[in-house]
Amino acid sequence: MIIILNNDITKEEVIQLINKLTDLGLEYHQSNLGGRLLMAIPNAPKDFDLRQIQMLNGVHEVYQVTEPYKLASRRWKKEPTIIDVKGVKIGGNTLNLIAGPCAVENEDQIFEVAELLNRNNIKFIRGGAYKPRTSPYAFQGLRTEGLKLLRRAADAYNLRVVTEVMDLSLLDEVYEYADVLQIGTRNMSNFYFLSELGKIDKPILLKRGMSAKIPEWLMAAEYILSGGNEKVILCERGIRTFDDSVRNTLDVAAFPIIKELSHLPIFSDPSHGAGIRNRVIPMAMASIAAGADGLMIEVHTNPEKALSDGPQSLYPQQLEEMIDKLRPIAEVVNRSFDFDKVVVE
Ligand code: PEP
Ligand code: MN
Image (cartoon, rainbow, N blue to C red; front, side, top):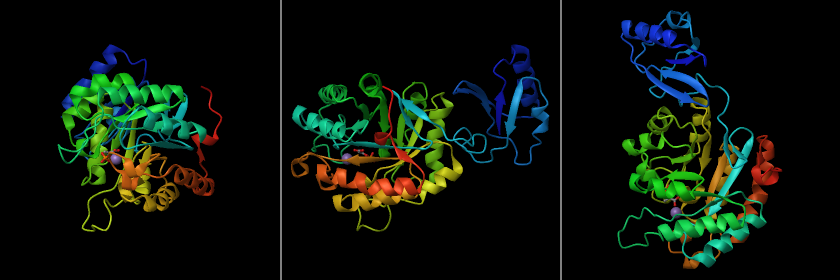
C-alpha cells in the first residue's frame, strides 16, 4: 500500500495516522518524492480495506500496491517520471542518446569523442573513469584524472556527464564531476550502497544486474527511491543466459514489461547487450521500437586501439548511421530525440 499525504498535513494528523497504522499492525516508511509526502506500507494484506486509511484527515490518496516494490510501482503513479538534467528531459515523450567510449583514456580521445557528439547535437557523454574489470591486471581507468578530463571535454562541448560510481567510497568524488551517476551491473545488488544513493540529489542510471529478475531490479530501484531520490533511470544491458553466441542477451521484453510495472524511465545499452559492434544498431532499433526511453552507446574514434570494449564500440560514422536509422522508428512510436529538440540551455 502507498499512502499519499496532504502536503499541509498537521503533526496531529500524522500522529493519528501512525496510531491507526500501529493499531492495524502495519509498518510504515515515510518518504518525500517530487514534493509529495508518501508512506510505503510493505505489509498491508492484499485484501486490506483502503477506506480505513482514506477516511483519515491529512490523507490525500491511498493505493493498493501488492508488489514488493512500492514507490517504483506504476500502481500509484500512472504518469511517467520525467527527469531534468541541466535542461534536458529524460522520460515522457523524449528519447535520449548517451554516447561515448567505454573508458576515458586520454585527453585527445575524450575531446575527439565530445566533438563528435556535439556535431551530432547529442546531449550526454559517457565514459568510465573507474572501470569494473574482471581482471585486476586489465586497465582500471584513469580514475580522478579521467573524471577531470571527462568534465572538461563535456563542458567544452556542452554535454552532460554520465559516469560510473563503482564504490561508496568514491561517491563524493564522482558526484562532483558527474551529472548522472551510473551504477554498474555488478553493483545492482549492493543494497547498502543503493540506500546511500537515495540520499543524493543527482540522477542515478541503474543498470540491471546480469542475472537479476525484473522484480529484483525494481527492488534495487526501490532502495534508491525509498531514500528520497526519485531520479532513477533503469538501464537494460543484457543478462546471462545459456547462449554464449552473444556477450550478453539483451532482454528486449524488459522494455514493455518495465513500462507496465513502473513509472521510471528505462534505457537500453545495446553495446554491452550485443558485445559486437555490428549487432549494436539492430539492437538499438529494436530497443526503441519496444519502448526504451533512450540508449547508452559505446563509440570510439579508434576502436582498434581502445583500452576496453573496443570490439563493441561503434565507429563515428556508425553512430551517425544509427541516428538516421532510429529517426523513422522514433516517429512510429511517437517520440522524438532530445538532439532533434530545441533545448533552452
Ligand atoms: C559500462 O557501461 O562500461 C559497464 C561497465 O557496464 P555494465 O555495468 O553494464 O557492465
Ligand atoms: Mn564498456
